[in-house]
Each structure stands twice: as structure tokens, then as C-alpha cells.
Image 1 (spheres, helix red, strand yellow):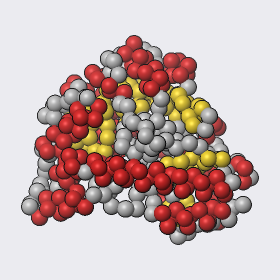
Image 2: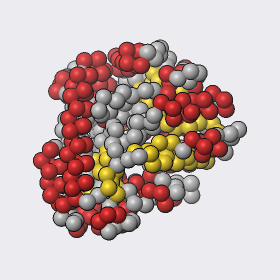
Image 3: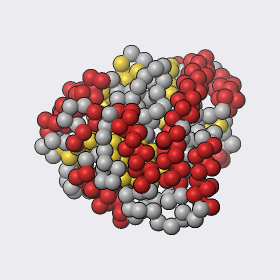
Amino acid sequence: TVARLRPFGETIFAEMSALATRHNAINLGQGFPDADGPASMLAAARQAIADGRNQYPPGMGVPALRHAVAEHQAHRYGLRYDPDTEVLVTVGATEAIAGAVVGLVEPGEQVVLIEPYYDSYAATVAMAGATRRTVPMVPDGDGFRLDRPRLAEAIGPMTAAIIVNSPHNPTGTVLPDDDLAAIAELCVAHDVIAISDEVYEHLLFDGRENRSIATLPGMRERTLRISSAAKTFNCTGWKVGWVSGPKSLVDGVRAAKQFMSYVGSGPLQPAVALALAEELDWVDESAAALQRKRDLLSSALAGAGFGVHRSEATYFVCADPRPLGFDDAARFCREMPARIGVAAIPVSAFADDAAPWRHLVRFAFAKHDDTLAQAADRLAALR
Ligand code: PMP
Ligand code: GLN
């Protein structure tokens, strides 16, 4: 392994899922749902295979999906993108992020990450030969917000891009409008690209709505908006994602993507196109069900003695095991599968400066209610 990738080792998700399997633990670590997406989408994928749509799709992605993505964003956010030049289908959001960084950031330039950050961001910045600057989130009541003075310090002449992730993994925070506005103003002032990872755009709770940074003044022309079918339609294994933005930026992503994967998943793209066009009611029901699951797991954690943070969106809730006598979440997560049969992820795995996050554990609640109930019983045994 080359030196620039050596520090990243194995992903925390692989490590904790392996531990869960070894101990037959309930896996509330890696974020994936245990139920399938809409039946019409699954049928459309089978049909596409039966119809012989099994060869390379076009480089930008199957037209039906590019059109569905453009229509969805026009309808939902008032963002207008040309489906032929401003929407690119990728191998999940992961490839969209990697393509954006590798295709648009020069070696030696800086990319700003908001900490805690999704693990692929830092590795991708390293692959591009760029450097990362991190800006922490800070506690705000039982939730989190951006440390804005630190953000203003971090953005400067060497900054090429900032990766924004709202709704946020791992904290489940929906960045407040004033934080998004502060990021946007700095991007405009310093001519910085925003790479906006919105994979949880539909999974918000308590009536909250996703606001894309691309809609803020001066931002459409400098934002790459990234999403994925994975979380919206419960198909994390399909790896169908997309990026939209001005042609000049999408061209950069495409320049990289064509030599990373060339194209991806031909027969799955028309199925996702159908789901985006016809199954958003299914998604609303799925988000409502997730909100109940968040409540189930949050109460179970509180009942077991954890300090529980507010989860506003995503699959995740963060909890503090210090009241139970554990002050190192990483150690706690390594011990729990064997000890009580539950796996989770330490938030410190998403941070360069682990200290502020040392005591936090991320639990995924996108699981059947009886699985959550069983996990609740096991967690109660920690008392
Ligand atoms: N970004 C975030 C914030 C994520 O949580 C994930 C995991 N779903 C991804 C990107 C990767 O998405 P995909 O599986 O579509 O590559
Ligand atoms: N996005 C998922 C999570 O945060 C996991 C994806 C992965 O395993 N790379 O848990």
C-alpha cells in the first residue's frame, strides 16, 4: 500500500461488521437497512435484466435516470440541471465524492472537512494528493452545530473545496440554515467549490426538510450536489449514485470517473429512475417508520443509562456511555459484541482530533422493530 493510503487501514465499518459476525451480535454498526426498497423498483431491475439491458450504459448514465434526477431536483429544490450535461450517474455517492475530489482538486490544495466526517472523505483527499483541513462541529444543547469561527479560519487561498454533509453522518444533525449560509458566504468570497453530500436528503424527522446548499445565493454555479439510491430506496448494495452541478464541475468529475469505473450498473439504473419518479410516497413512509425506530432506540439507550443526543435525520443516533462507566467509546465498541451481543461504531473513527468525540457511540436504527427490541434488552444488561 502506498504511504498516502497507509494511515487509513481497514474501514471501521468492515472491522465492526466482522466483529458482529464473529460474535453473532446484533449489528447496529454499519448503516444499512434490513428491509428491501419498493417492490416496483425491484421488479423493474429484474425486468431490465430479462430485457437484455446488460451491456455498458452510456458514460453519463442511462438517460431515464439522468432525467429523473433532474426532474426530482427541479421539483423538490427548484434546482434546474440539464440532464444531458449536468447530471452524472456514479457508482454510489462514494464514487461521486472521489471523482469530485480527484477531478477538481490539484495536488497540494486543501479540502475542508467538517468533523466528524464520513470516512471516505479523508482517504479520497489523500488519493488526490491534496491535504485536508478539519473544522469541528460543537455541542449545541442535545444536538450539534458548526464551529463557525474555526470554519472562517480554515478557508483561505489554498482551499479548493469544502465537503458539506447535511443531513450529517454520524451525528444525525441537519445543519441549521445559518450554518449553511455561513459556509456559502465563505465559498463565494474565496471561490471555493462545495461538494454537498446529501445522501440522507429524504430521511429527516419531526417535519424537518432538507435544504441544499446549492440553492443559496451564488452557490448553484459552485456546488456539486451528490445523492444516492442507497439510503432513499433501501438498496445500499446496488451502488447507484449521482452528482449534479454546473457543466464545468460535472466535467471534472466525469474526467476522473471514466477511468475509475467507466460506467456502473446498467440494469439497475432504469429501476432507480422509476423509483425516483414514482415511489417518493414510499420514501415518505419509510422516513416516518425510521422516525419511530429512532424513538425506539433512543428510549432504549436512555433507559439503559446512556446520555442520548438528538437525531434529526439519517439512520443514526449518538449516545454517551460515560454514565455507565465507560469513557472510551472505541474500546466500548470493541468489547460490546462479545459482552452483550450488540455492535456499534465509535464516533472517534470519523475524526482527526478524536478527543471531543472519544465518549460517543453511533448506533444505527434502520432495523426491524423486533431486532431493535432485542438490542434494547441486551443494552439494558449493561446497567
Ligand atoms: N456519504 C455518506 C454520508 C454516507 O453515509 C454514505 C454511506 N451510505 C455514503 C456517502 C456512501 O454512499 P453510497 O453507498 O451510495 O456509495
Ligand atoms: N454509510 C454507511 C455508514 O456510515 C456505511 C457504508 C460503508 O460501509 N462504507 O455506516
